[in-house]
Image (cartoon, rainbow, N blue to C red; front, side, top):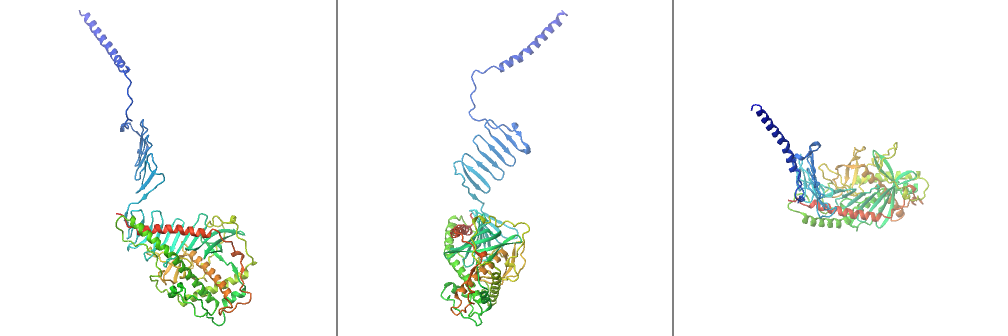
Length: 579
């Protein structure tokens, strides 16, 4: 019995061990048994994997990929890409694109929604105002236009939602507008000057509804020139300018189209002996009555230089009056259209800012506006100096024969490029110590200390009091004579050297026009005759060029584009802040 017990225990242990080996095999066979019917396909795409299944990306971003092709990337901004082709990006600004094509931009957010039109973009800034340290604020309207308001409550500038910026005059009206490559300047009397700089460096300038010029650069004989085709009174004519480089900028230098004999210049400069009374016949002209507060002709003329002085002052005032009359109707139409559009666009109250209206037609005060005898004397001295200088230039000029028009292939396609190294600088005539008095030839809008502007109108008179331009190529001038509504007489302003040079060139052009008129009238109407044969003009080759045949169309196109900009600015300036 003792021997059989160990044997039984051993048998039981062996049997238990055998069972342990057989059970896992049976379980595995049962688990791998094929199902009785195929499993159905999922009814919908599976949900995104749980966070535990995410594979972390660098920098804290993570990417999830499922059988539906859904990818999420986030790190302050998240991108989701699904089989529907939709992308969402968030992180301050969001872009959504879904099966469509319309893009809307609102407060920095871009959404593209299904079924919209490609390329249509609406940009709207949040309406309201932002105060600035030290006073003043920026006001944004419901349409996305902006208005800068000074600490004193004056609107100093308006920026439209398309980017055109208008600076306001101290009278609350638009002074200048900058839009892309175009600048518009307004005079107090309603005059408008529009300048457009084209991609090739050429310029189109409108000085009224039916006048202006187109300027192109060209090379002739290895030298650089500018040719202007003026279009006025239904006719086209040219002026030619040499180009000088000074302190990083180019300046035009006028070349007379014609010279006269030396005796004629002596006649124009020296005097007539006895004073001459002359009737201009201006008495019944509207411009003359309008400017009666400003301009009085000499009662008699001691020398032709004084006759030419009155001639060129009158020419400037007539041009200013004509430009004012031409633009008055257009300005009124723009103002009326702007008011109607602003009323339709307004969504509530306003900020109390000034509204833009038609420019003053001779209203307002500009201080001492009388063109005093002292100022006229200064102008006459400049006239005499330029006559003398032209006499010298005529004597030194070459053969008096017309020059051929510049070939189109000779035009300088980049007239503002710096000159070759070593090119000597040429001091502009406007900085010549002898040239101090300037007659404004185009509407300008110098900026004042409070951020607003005042206007300078054709016929105003400036005296340069600086000899050296500042870093911005500006010099100080004194307003010696101003018309109503313009910068005050006695006021000191900063004016660009290039603007003074343009005034000087125009001054010389008008002296030449005056010499031409005097040559026609000498010996008649009480004017003594000039030396025989000396008053016959002879062409100056350097001052000759053929006119641009497209000048009229280019000027009209510039005016049309400026009209559209004016209307946009009128709407922006009159629009109240949305609620």
